[in-house]
Image: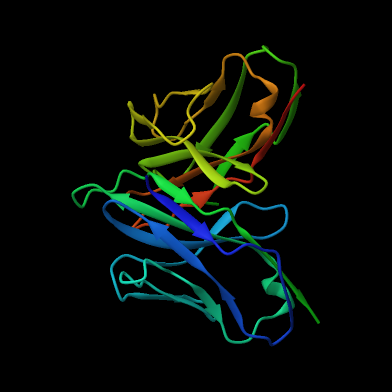
Amino acid sequence: GDSVTQMEGPVTLSEEAFLTINCTYTATGYPSLFWYVQYPGEGLQLLLKATKADDKGSNKGFEATYRKETTSFHLEKGSVQVSDSAVYFCAMEVNAGGTSYGKLTFGQGTILTVHP
Amino acid sequence: EAQVTQNPRYLITVTGKKLTVTCSQNMNHEYMSWYRQDPGLGLRQIYYSMNVEVTDKGDVPEGYKVSRKEKRNFPLILESPSPNQTSLYFCASSLRGLAEYEQYFGPGTRLTVT
């Protein structure tokens, strides 16, 4: 079945370090891919998305490229800040015949802690 | 202010006592969903709805019911709660399909079933 797998965490970095969080997917159709971020005590917020192969999503210095050949959507940031400390979720929506039904599958989440 | 609201935010209940968690959005969104979040499992979709009177099961629908009689409301009903339904629940909405429109999440409802 359809699934999303994220690298195991938690991830602890120093400020200004480079961040990579791996995400791979298994899908029967052609998914749209998303990264969501959850700050402590809050709901999720959309961070970025990509809807077709080779698309790059970007927001707030974060980037992820939709790689169909490796079924991956890794999240990267060149220089993290303390304020980036949060839980990051990779997610996908598999569209049936191009129609979005709103059915979203999430990875297990990766806790990121950034120290000054 | 555009938002998704959930009530209650915290609830402690006992096994078998029916409960409803309400969800409301003021953005005229067509799509709405319920998720549960458990440590190490991420978020799992319980039910989703594309519009009024159109609902479908997500990945973990057992033990839950929903209804969508009005566009703005999407209540989650637990007819006979059990301890394995102890979790953090999120409601979310989007104008339409997720590839084009952002999904907005409510603040969450923390449910404990003893």
